[in-house]
Amino acid sequence: LFTFFIATQVIAQDNYWQQQLRYNIRAELNDKEKSISGFESIVYKNNSPSALEYIWFHLWPNAYKNDSTALLQQIKNDTARAKKKEIIGPGSIEGLAFKVNDQPAQTQAHPNPQYIDIIKLLLNKPLQPGDSIAISTPFKVMLPPYFSRSGYADGQFMACQWYPKPAVFDKNGWHEFPYLDMGEFYSEYADYTVSLTVPSAYVVGATGILQTKEELDVYKKLGAKNVADRGNKPVVYKPLNKNEKKTLNYHAEQVPDFAWFADTDFVIQYDTTQIPGGQVIDAFSYYHNKKGTIWRNSIDYIKDGVKSYSKWIGAYGYPVVQVVEGPKNNSSGGMEYPMITL
Image 1 (cartoon, helix red, strand yellow):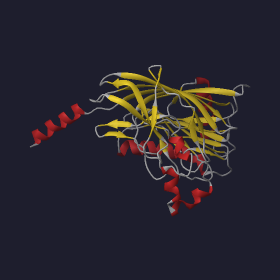
Image 2 (cartoon, rainbow, N blue to C red; image 1 turned 45 degrees about the vertical axis):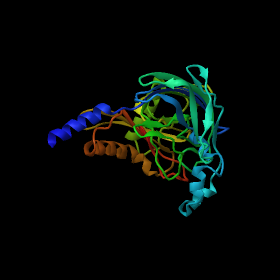
Image 3 (cartoon, rainbow, N blue to C red; image 1 turned 135 degrees about the horizontal axis):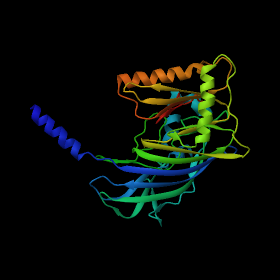
Image 4 (cartoon, rainbow, N blue to C red; image 1 turned 45 degrees about the horizontal axis):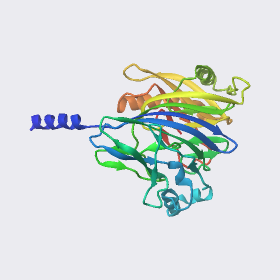
C-alpha cells in the first residue's frame, strides 16, 4: 500500500502543469484625473495538454463601472456593507486594443451581463501545447473612490487589480470569475517587469524589487534614519530633482499579482531581517506622517512577522517585504499582495 501511494504521488507530480506568463507593463499615474494610463505585453506559454482557441481575461476595474456588476450587486445586497454604499463611485478600464503576435485580435463579452469585468480574447489560431504567444494592449484605468481594495482616498492611491490579466487555466478548465468585495483571487504565477511614472513628490511601494537605484538608495537612507530615531520628527521624502515626473522600475519573479501604492505623505522605515535558513530580507514600511502614530514601530512588527511565519510555515520566498498604511476609511480592512501588504 505504501509503495502504491508513493507511485501515485510521483505520477501525479509528473502530470502537473501550470501556465507560464511574463508581463511587461508601462504605466503612468495622473493624480489630478485619478487615472492610470498603461501598455502591457504578455508572453503566454501554454504548458497544458490542450490547444487553446481563446484566453479569458479579467478586466477587474470594470467591476466598479455601474450598479449592475457582480461587485456592486454583492455590496448592495449585504446589509453588513452599508457604510460602503456611502462612498461607492465609478471606475473603469478603457482603451483596449488587443493584439496577438502583433496582429489585431477580436474579443467577446461574457454571456453573463453582470460580468463586464471579464472578456474572451479570441486567438487567430489555436495555441498548441508547449507553444507561446505575445499578447499586448494599451489600457486606461479610471480609479474609483476607495471602497473595495483599489482606488483613491485622502491623497493616497491604491492600484490593485488594475491591469488586464489572463484568467487561470488549470486541470479543471478556465476560472473566469468576476471581481467581488467578499471573495478571493486565483491568479497565474508570472514574472513582472513594470515601469511606473508618477509625479516626483510621491513615495511608491510596489510588488517586486525597485530597480531604480537612486530612488532605492534614498528610501533606504531615510528609512534607516527613521528607524534609528523614532522619538523625533521623521525625515520625510523630498523629490530627487526638479522634474515634474519620475519613472520607477520594478522586477518580480514568480508572483501571482502586482500591486502598488503611492502617496506624498508617506514616512519610510527600512531595515533588514534574517530569516531561518540565513537569507537576509529587506523590510520597508510606509505610513502617514501623524503625531504619536503606532506605525513608528511598524518595522519591528514586519520583521517579527516574516521571521515567525518563516519558522511556522516555511522560509519567506522573496527578497523584500513591505507594509503600507491605508487611508482613513479603511474600507477594505487591509489586503495582502506579493511582497507588499496594505
